[in-house]
Structure formats: structure tokens, C-alpha cells
Image 1 (cartoon, rainbow, N blue to C red):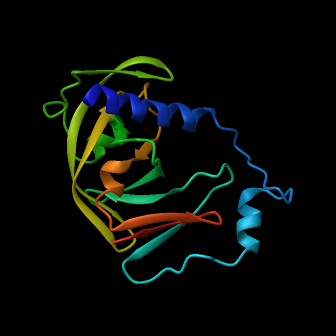
Image 2 (cartoon, rainbow, N blue to C red):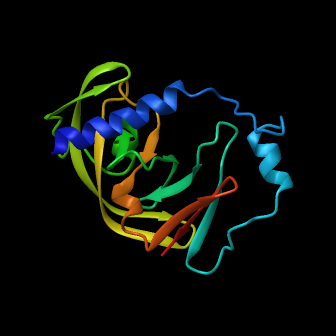
Length: 168
């Protein structure tokens, strides 16, 4: 089961590294320019947080993992949050707590992963506690993926007109 979930995390990492950097909307404008000209379709209320899609159409923002600011890409196709070893060490996961015993396949080839639990993941005023994650070696994953292990702790999330709204 964990191997299957790691495979899904890997698919997310591959997608993140292979999608073109500039997505063009049907109007011919870059996605960010088109989003800037449109009114926000989803209201943001207390207990919610809105992320605007970047030029590539991805939802990337600054999250706080165990109190540390980390840039994360929201990936609904990833079962777990995934981070590299450097980020994990910044969050307080040491060599003693990182047991790289799970074999995974990534865009860069086979890799080993360690299972951890992040005490808290925050964005805006939203907070989730006890979020499962996997740590990969730095050469296997360059960014941090915010997967379903975080999103399923929220009340809901929705995407419309280039915006993702997270609700707690």
C-alpha cells in the first residue's frame, strides 16, 4: 500500500518536472495575466485560504511545516506530502529519524524514501496536525509536494477560474 502511494507521489514529481513553464489560456494570455484580469469566482472567508495558479497552472505557495516556511506545490495526485532530505532536516528530522527503507521510482530513477509525520502544516490561518509525509534524497526530489495527506485534513478544497480555495 505504501509502495503504491509512493508511486503516486512519484507521478506528481514527474508531472511537476515535465510540464511546460508557460501555459497559455484560450485568450492567448499567459495564465497569470488572464487570472489577474478575472474577478475572483470563489469567495475567501475566515477559515479559508486562496491560492492563485502560477504561469504553468500549478498551485504553489508558501506553507509552514513545523513552523518553518517552505514553498510547496499542491498536488492532488500525490497521496502524501513529499519533501527532500534538506527540507526534512530544516524541519528537525535528523539522520536518526530518517529510515530510507521504502523503495520508490522517480523521474530521476529509483530512490529510497523515509516515512515521517509532520507535527503541523499551515497556510494562512489554516492548520493541520499529524500530517504523514515521505522524505526522498535531495537528488530524487527538488521541490516539496503538498499531497492529500494534508488536503484530506481540511473541510474541503475547490478549484475554479485559476484559483484553489482551501477551507477548514
